[in-house]
Amino acid sequence: MGTGTPNQMRNYFWCAFRWIILLFVVNRVLAETRYSVAEEVKDGTVVGNVAKDLGLEMSSLKYRRFRVVSENENPFFDVNQDNGDLYVVRKIDREELCRGSGACLMELKIIIENPLEIHYVVVEIKDVNDHSPVFPEKEQRFEIGEQTLPGRRFQLHAARDPDSGSNSIRTYILTSNEHFEIDIRVSDDDKIPFLVLKKSLDREQKNRHLLQLTGVDGGKPPRSGTLNISITVLDSNDNRPKFSRETYEVEIQENIPVGTSV
Image 1 (cartoon, rainbow, N blue to C red):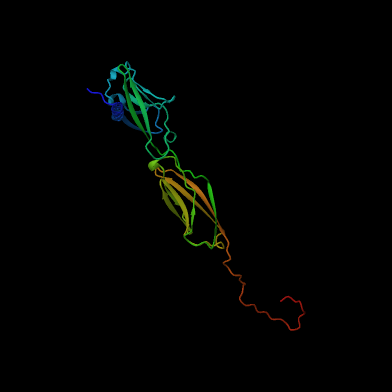
Image 2: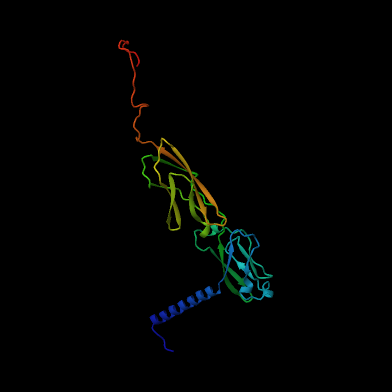
C-alpha cells in the first residue's frame, strides 16, 4: 500500500474520524429508549420496564450492578434490580425543569457491568394542569371621556400560566355589559386582551363602571383567574344650561316699592 503526501494523510485521518463520530451518534440515537410520565405523580410510580426493553436478563441485574447514573445529587428516577422497572423516586415539577411549551425531556444513563454496557433512556415529562392563570395585578383602572367614540381599544393585562400546551391560557371572558366587549389578539404563543368600547358612555347616567375579566386555561377541568376593571367616566361639556320653565310670567302692582323681590 502506497503512502500519500502529509496533506492526503491528514485528510484521510479527518474523514475517518468524522465517520467514527457519525456512527457513534447514530448508534446512540438508535439505542435510546423512550418513556413518558406525567409530572406530580406519586413516588414509586413505574415509568416502564427498562431491563425488558433493553433485552437484559432479569436474573443477572443485581450481579451486573444494573443502575441509573445521574449527575444530580437528588435524582428523579431509579431502577429496581429485582424486576428491571424504572420508577419515580421524588416529585417532578415540569415547570421547574423546563420552561415554554416545547417537549420536556430528561436523558438518563443506564449502566450495567460485567461486561460493561451503557444505555441512554429518554423520559418525557408530560404537563398536568396544576396552575391557574394569574394576572400581574388584581385591578386595572381607566379614565375614559364620555365623548370617546365607539371602537376605541384599551389594552388589558394578560394573564400568565406556567402550564404548557392545552393547559395554558385559552381565552378571556368579560362580564356582560352594554358598553364594552373583549377582543383577543394572538401574538406568537401569547393572547393579549383588549377592552373595546361598543357604546358611547354618558357620565350623567353612570359615572363609573365595574367589570371583571376572567382568564381561562384549556385544562380539564379548566382553571381560571380574574382581573377587576374599574372605569371612571370623565365629563365633557355636552349639555346646555336649562331653566325649569321656558317662560316665566308674574303680575305686579304698578306702585310697588323699588327693590321688591319679584
